[in-house]
Structures are given as structure tokens and as C-alpha cells.
Length: 329
Image 1 (cartoon, rainbow, N blue to C red):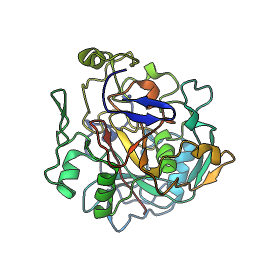
Image 2 (tube, rainbow, N blue to C red):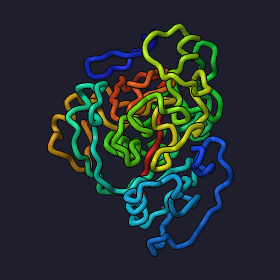
Image 3 (cartoon, helix red, strand yellow):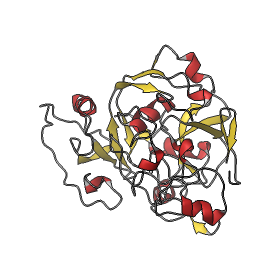
């Protein structure tokens, strides 16, 4: 394991289509705005705080028929842009999913068990990408420095903002009309209709093109030991947001790139308390340690599973923690 700041996991201290629409990839082209009636016959609504990017889901991205139907039944536009910050957001519809360790996952920690049903009753818009340096500087702290890691810059405009604490992320949200997603919302959004360990399946080495995680060349460059994927993702540190394939809701970088703050305080026994299922969980409201999800460029594949839970002190910040925003319609 490489040296670095310590993230805390349950009993473990530890320092990602070619056939998809290009509009959702890092090299995306221009998306044509549309104002038609959705396929269900329900005219979609754009929130007052947003501008329309695309009304109905791209069927090459949202391929799960059940998810597609849930999105359309909300009567809300799928892809919008916040007017004030220009942050792009995608609609996550209500639904029920299985939260926690995937079946047969021998890398799951005790705090990922037992797996249980979570029902979310309200739609929410979630950032299509992590908040970038440019967005953070333009709309919160103009001179923010995401710094570098061992001489590799983390400061490019289109890289995700890092060196932000939970308190910083929360303050950005408060100023701009957003919230941090709850842990329950985050995993539902990140899974995108899947029940596997990763959005692409159960095998970490099948994830080429999906995520920026610890890879062989980075491991060698920094002299790290421990696990890595077998493939190269093309990035030494954080990648520009939306450089990789989106998940089943269209979200980019939910696995890898940077860990993402959630609103909840961390409770290692949270899932035990909800073993029989839970509706609209929010987790503890108070506590010095706050939940992190998704893994990062700094970590190997077992830390980048959809169910993996991390936590860090709310006042702390590192080169591999950022955030994405959420907002009610």
C-alpha cells in the first residue's frame, strides 16, 4: 500500500462505449436541444433554475427499460444545466434498489453488509460530473488551489476540484442552491440499474474505458505496492471530467477519479440498522467523519466498487477527494 493521507474504512485504514452517444463522453460533440413530447406522451418539465440540454434519455445510454420508464414517468427533463453555474445535471428518478455488498463480493467490508432494499420516493438531479476547478473557482473561491501531486498538476480547469473538505463542499452547495447527495442517493445513482460490483460487471479488469483508478504505470511511477487494475487509463493523476464511459443513468466518473463527499455522517453500523429495508435514508445528521464514495485515481479496484464505503474527517482535504452536487427539481 502506498503512503499518503489515511481514509478510514470499516476496520481498515487506507491511504474505470464506443457505442455510446458521444455527447456523454469526454470528447463529446454538441447535443441538439429538444422540446418535444416524451415517448410516453407526457410533456417534460424543466425546473425553473435550469436550462434544457436534452429532454428525453438517450436510449443508447439509458439502456435499462425499467430505468427509462421511471425517468419518463416523472415528467421531468432528463438532462439540464443549472442557469447560474452552468453545471450539467441528470435526472435520477424514484425507485428501489439493493444497497450494499453485491452477491459473492469477497472484498466487501463489514460496513457494506447486510445488503438491503432502499426506496427513494422523490426524483433528484445529480451532477453529470464531479465539480471542476473552474466551476469551484468561478462560483465559490476564485483563488482555490487544488495543488499538485508529486509534480503532476491537479489544477486544470476541467479536472475535478480537490483539496476541498466536506465543509468546503457543503458551503459551495449552500451558496449555489445545491446539496450534497445522501449516501442512499449516491449508490442508487452510481449503480445505474446494476447489481454488480462495478458499473461494467464483477471483474475489475473488464473496466478499461470506464474509470480512472490506480493502474500499473502509476503504481510503478510512485513506487506503490498493493493492487491495481491490469489496464492503463491514460492518466497519472485526476483526469478531466467526463473522460470515461458514462453509467446507466448517464453519470460520468462515479467510479474512480476522485472520492465524492456525501451529506451523511458515517456510521459503520448503518446497514445493520436497515437490514429489513429503508425508505429515503439520510444517515446520521451529525458526526465528525463524513461518508465518501466511489474511489479515486489513487486507489486500486477493491476500493472503487459501487458498494465501497469510505469516510474522512469533515475538516480534512486531500489530493483525491472531491464532490458532485444534487438538487431537487
